Image (cartoon, rainbow over all chains, first blue to last red; front, side):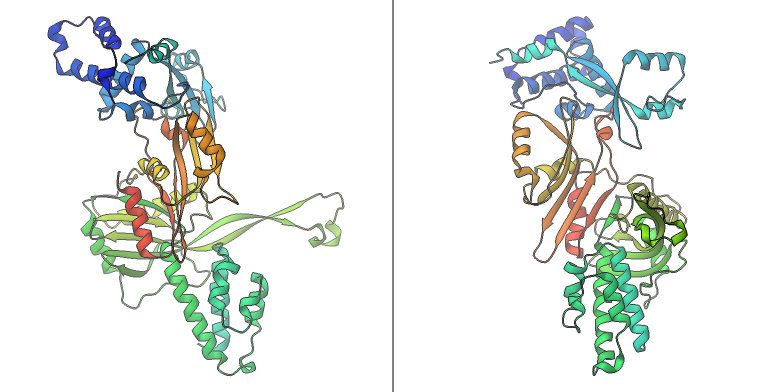
Length: 154
Length: 348
């Protein structure tokens, strides 16, 4: 991984979006977030791998920036969404047949807000726990980030 | 043992082999070699008939020869059920290790041997035999598991009053009872506790998980500090096995970044699917995340088969660390068995 080869566009964006002062910037928490962000952007800027980046798992992101604690990992993912690096999407997995289907964010929001959890395969009521086992989130790279990756980082 | 008992025991033991899905051609014929034409019989049913119809007086020393054959098959079987076709869970660093070992040791009697009869009412785990290999103590249990087998039957097998020429196909379901040899292994070197469910290729994974859960329940009755539901995480081994050059990848499921699940199996004609044209072309143009792998290692005398079977769903876990606690190993000797386990759990 060669972070020096990559410009600091997203680090600047991160500082701006959080309105960080120089003092805050020196805090360990923000320093760590910036280093993970740098690691993430640098990896995908420099990698030779070929990918459409349409379906990115938590695992794939974790593998690039590890080690990171779980709570911070979730915050880091949120930062990637705020910075318009990632878009998020949802899928449902039938735990018996391993069938996978996409589910709309609005439908999930509706279930959560109304606290009426539905099995998207059978369309029967299920518990919140069963619902959260079935539904998972995945990500895609935004067009903006894909464009950024194409530019010359040398 | 008299002549008739010997014949019955041999046939019963061979029926267990058949139930385990062992190949008559590749595995049993070599055992029968040198014995009156038995190694030239090509179906299980004729082999059983032929053995049952053997007469003591047709050949001199037939009783002795048959006794030797039984010993040979029994030795092969005892070795085979220790390491073949297993579904495993490994636990590291559990505080109950010493207590558990003490309990299991107290159940040992020196002359205990495995009950190799086909049946028996083994509703609960009954301690049967113990083997010690280097620093590893293997405690074996026999348990009868049943499964439902679907068989196609011919219309003319029906009684005449039920025959209907319009039947296109007839199927029958029957309950099959299979003796399984589950085991608990304690490794004094690493302090690992390994639970093994037998006949992993014959049963659905759900049944195998149930078998391991039963073993755990049994052990939890013996110790104060319980064995947890989940063992070592073996998911990281999937990627490692994929990138490790030795061995042949026989089956692989993986995901690509466009949200497609791929499954490849090497069937006939190529040993390792990684050298397949489609696979090479694919990985040159996409990034893959393997989540299910079966590898075969060709040793001098036999093959070792290892399967670590994760799922697409496991990749989606929001911690970024997929979790999988069970895996499959099938081999024929302790060296390769424990080496395979060591390799799979080493990064967990």
